[in-house]
Length: 109
Length: 121
Image (cartoon, rainbow over all chains, first blue to last red; front, side):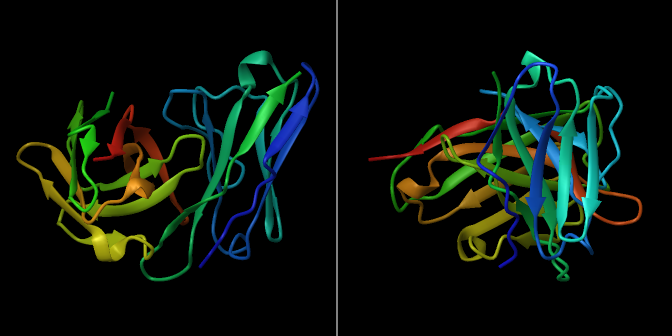
């Protein structure tokens, strides 16, 4: 089965840049999406189609793709960015099974 | 603004069937894909499956034998049934609207607040 791999945790100080990676064999063929989830809340889409930002998402959130790895970058991290981040994609089969990465806990020191 | 609201029993006995309904407001349920996603406490997200308003479905292969989804367009609702539940099915269950991105890809743009379902006798 198709898997997406993320680091369990990333820690940065306020104002620094956080980078969260997501690796998967199908990522060169399938777009990746990123969600932010704060405790007790539903996930919120922060990046779509590898690098595009939905309206209302701060410009400090950006995404990039290289081969089998996609990266969520948060520039000038703020305390409010502390959350779990999940990448999501789909397999290339006809049923388009949705797959989530295991999630990365971003801690703002 | 589209809103989704999950409803259903918060406690289900082992071996029984979990049943949840998602009510969509602020927009039509028609012509969209709708998904169920779950999250055990302290763990990651797991996609359960999707239904289109025509009634066609796709399920996660790991749950396919136990999952049934249905849609009622007249009520702007869609539903999930998960049979033969065990403690491993205890989770927050979310309903979400699934979109097909221009150029390919699938993503979720609206989510319900989630509902905790506990499997216990």
